[in-house]
Amino acid sequence: MAVRCQCVKLRVISSILGSQLSNTVTRCGSVQTASRQYASLSKEQKERLAQGPSLADFIAEDLNTTESPDGYSGKLVKEKGMKRLRLPPWLKTEIPVGKNYNRIKESLRGLNLSTVCEEARCPNIGECWGGGEHQTATATIMLLGDTCTRGCRFCSVKTARKPPPPDPNEPANTAKAIADWGLDYVVLTSVDRDDLPDGGSTHFAQTVEELKKRSSVLVECLTPDFRGDLEAVERVALSGLDVFAHNIETVKRLQIFVRDPRANYQQSMAVLSHAKKVHPDVITKSSIMLGMGETDEEVFQTMKDLRAVGVECVTLGQYMQPTRRHLKVSEYVTPAKFAYWEKVGDKLGFAYTASGPLVRSSYKAGEFFLKNLLEKRRNSGQPGPS
Image 1 (tube, rainbow, N blue to C red):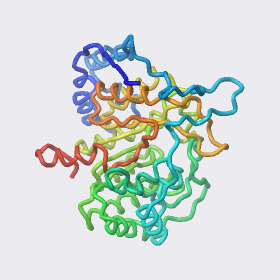
Image 2: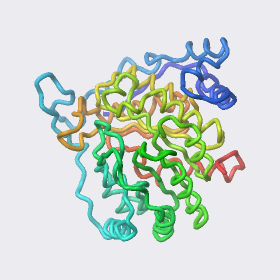
Image 3: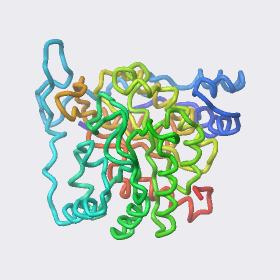
Image 4: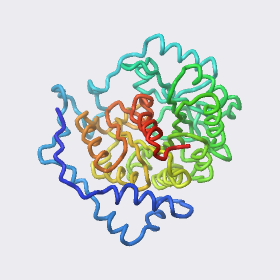
């Protein structure tokens, strides 16, 4: 059903959660945690933030976001005693086929590159690699190998305490592959490499530099938290990239159940805040998975916290259990509810909110809003990433 969101008229909240707070964060000293950022605000700013909108401000009396579309009668919320939920029809995707899909796969294998699309078993791999409706092929390159030093309960990437050393030729190989594909927007991500002194940040920065030498491609880096090492965050943020992304993944209460214990809510918020602090013009981005047992109030608070540290773009997608060994799905969120969260993101002042069952943090990046936003800023002479 269509979402009817008759939100009450809010006070102008961008001055609370947007530019004013972001500027305050970028002017503060060395930022170690999100709580320190909050503590640095003036009494007036804290009061204005506390008086900001609540979830109730966004809920309309006639809004029904739990009704299943197309008359689907299956269970959407996991109940006690249920082994697992059945996949609803809106989450079923076609098997990836096509010449472009095969061409990209062969190119990746020939250059010894990995992609998060394959390793994380992304449901959109056929559409992204095949080009989809607009025939723009995108792929998210995974740097630093295919083996992670962490063991998050939602992720199917291989784990080990001591993965093989990074390939020193990977930055150049990645740049060559992207130049050959003729892409105009690329996402670079990586496994966590807690075994490396700099967490792999130098490798990230070298890859961005190689790409910028060879083409005018727009580069998004979806980074790990580098164990909270802000020097590593700064190294990547100042590498010449266009978008700095780091995923908060889930709400604060569920962090310990979903992510590896070495990751946490405050650390991720600090990473996003510091990237904006050292490079105020860079676009920052994060992602939230739904269906893990979170409440609406918790999702809303997470979105507000992301805006408070200057995040401009947010994506929300359905968590899908990759294997039977991983965390089970607690709820399949309806398309109507995802559309609702997109409206909430717009009201909170995000420049771009992508929310849908199959949306992923790097899903169809070249066709989404970020490329157009970057080009619009450059053409209008507004500040943008250098």
